[in-house]
Image (cartoon, rainbow, N blue to C red; front, side, top):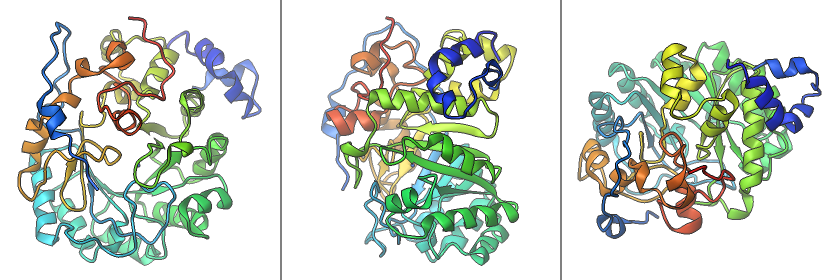
Length: 407
């Protein structure tokens, strides 16, 4: 860790540390209907700039996420998919699904996730999991926590060679979580399923959506997660799309405070933490490390710190990230419902590589407002999903970032 890390954490996160009842100097030593923008993006012209543009995700994304179905038995108040219990017409059939999996494997995408809705609502799920294993993919499953997620079902998934599962926990207590998920008893099922997953030797990731309902429970949720030895805490910051409303989302100041709390938790060394649609967590990390974006490559080369390695990836909506809907629509993110094409008509790789929308999103110099001036734009770039949801401009500034660029 850098020499000035403790001082920086102390300056930025003293209020957060008080939540842990640790105020001594020693405490500072630990360190989740499509709109089409084709007309708009076709009229976009590449910016005139001499700044280098990272091209590492031009050929393939770092992660591909497929919404295997929108069917789900929960009634989550924030659901971006606006899921309902029954399968939707036009979802990919088994052969189309297998073709997609094989294409992603041949494309050599490093990470693949099957999400929903609830993947357990697909009758061919085990066939799909077995195909991922056959293709030797690095893949995970994100099921909903309902009565369908039994210990026997988990055993069946393990026999099919599933190595990692992500579950959602959105509150530190049953009342908070169950109200958010819309079904009583869900919180207790999450705890039971987490224990079963760990007992079976399957990797466990926990996803949490931060909004007004749980913004005061971030530390308490981390304490709950400690008991399960999770591999990763993936923290989503609510984007008003689907059922989610703007009134549920944190404002810029609240978001910054939440990111400071997450950084403080990260320094405890309990588990790794990443954020979704709060890419400015990377800025918070670098500020606490005392490392500038320009210095980052050299620092990593000297000492490959895992936190800095994750930070350096610079994955964002459409930039190293691709989302395939239940019907085959290809979007930059599940929270950015703008279709660039459909895999029923074009290969996924062709859409990702050649779509004007994806090409624009991969160009940090095309960002507008303060995001376009920000020295962190190559690593962060702001939430394109949030910018689109709140301003209608997919390349606009992220409204929920307090940082003012130095440039």
